[in-house]
Amino acid sequence: MDKVFIEGLEVDTVIGVYDWERGIRQCLRLDLECGWDVRAPAAGDELACALDYAAVAARIQTFAGEARFQLVETFAERLAGALMAEFGIAWLRLKLTKPGAVPAAAGVGVEIERGCR
Image (cartoon, rainbow, N blue to C red):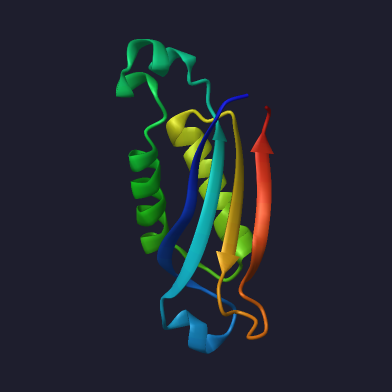
């Protein structure tokens, strides 16, 4: 399966379970892989046939800007569903990192895989 990917996309959102987290925006880092057959867009060299990663990245930014979740698990699950539905993605893997959440770690988070390869 071919993949279209976005690595290290940083977004600001309201995320966290503690009261102090609910009043600030925090950075999340996303790595996204999407199953996408690139033969058709490659054959015609046409963006209309491709998974437009700029549009996907913009949608993720918008989603993060509107989100108000306590758990990174909820953020990941809802974002995955939105991307699959809106862009017709049959399979994706999303890694969501919350830098600084655990002082001794570079980051913590979740990685989910949804759909069929």
